Length: 111
Image (cartoon, rainbow, N blue to C red; front, side, top):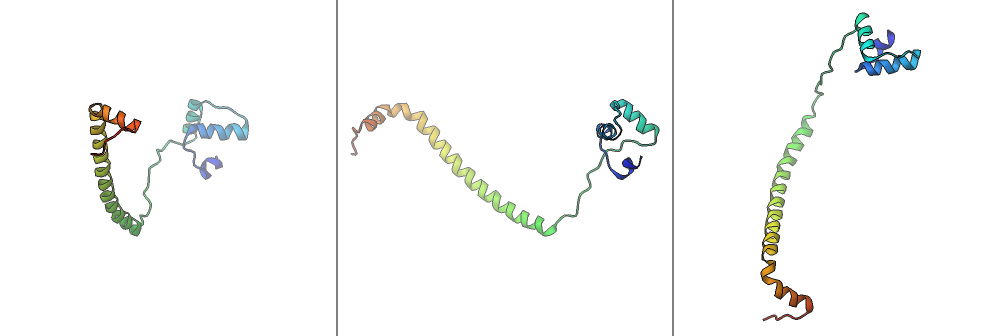
């Protein structure tokens, strides 16, 4: 009983593991749940409690976030333009196959 008051167990499975380790007695989950209920314990779902926010860190993040958005948008436009160029190149590559073949063989005219 003192163990349950001094430590928090989030699941019946963790209580079962403790009891088995300490007393070499094995319970099923439903058996442990019923036992705990009989001796006055009940399950309470843990709730997330927000901590104290660091206001300065949040302000720094907000400023950096705006800079990151600008950087991302610039990068995205550059990548999009490059992707479009590649798509156009590979769509038209068959039209220029003969010229590419000459380039590969070293037979090209710069005029």
